[in-house]
Image (cartoon, rainbow, N blue to C red):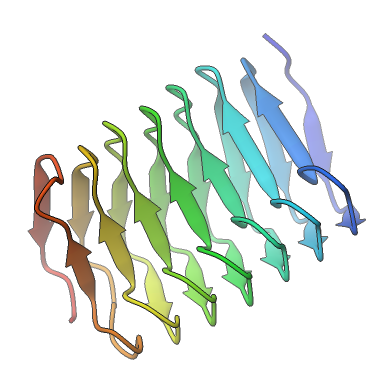
Length: 173
């Protein structure tokens, strides 16, 4: 049930996530630089609701933002770049609205979804990633609309045969 505002901080070189949002009730995480962590930038879990906006997240060893176990954050107007894995990793029933972010130059995918997760991903610019812009697998699904997915090394989407319900509309591929 934690709340709060985390604004204008520089968070770097942490052994674990730079910020962990666990079972939280709508904290605001805004205007931070979260970089060069030995794991991820922000992890939202255990049904958390949070607003993650206007942050620059880069150079982390794991995902820039990880969303799992029924977390349902609003992730908008962030820059997620130069990560050593996927920029956003949604798994184990994670949800969330991922909107108007710039996601680029990550070593895996821009967004990776699995494990009965169902995000709404819309209006993002996802480019320059080593694999596809978006990968969906292992029961993951979601809605992907009005994203610019051009310029990724392996293409726009990788939807595996074991993916759940995936809705795609209005994307620039």
